[in-house]
Image (cartoon, rainbow, N blue to C red; front, top):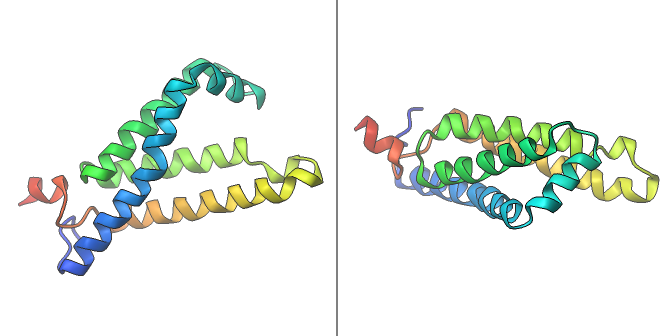
Amino acid sequence: MNATASSPFQNASLLAARALMALMFVPAGISKITGFEGTVGYIASVGLPLAAAGAVAAIVVEVLGGLALLAGAGTRIAALVLAAFTLAASVFFHAFWAVPADQAFVQQLMFFKNLAIVGGLLGLAAAGAGGWSLDARRQG
């Protein structure tokens, strides 16, 4: 399927998918800006190097990627970048297999929720933005 879906239902569904995915990423990126030191500390707490650079990268990916999804601009690339980011974040920050048993349930829930988000992002990457998007305007 190209970026322009063939029916109003498909266009509306893809717009809803993009908006709901953006709702996951844009506020998270903004909260990393407003709580930058805490974000850096959290990244460092899992042993990742260059925590400040990682925080900046996370902000850029979440805010710009989320806004790209919302607008339907470069949707396939934005969805793939966000999918890779979410998968990596899941492994590092929701490693349920490496936490005490009393913390494992919540971390496992967050890990698999993130995998579902990755699945939705891969679906957007495959389907494209739909007709109600900037991608469709560029094609048409």
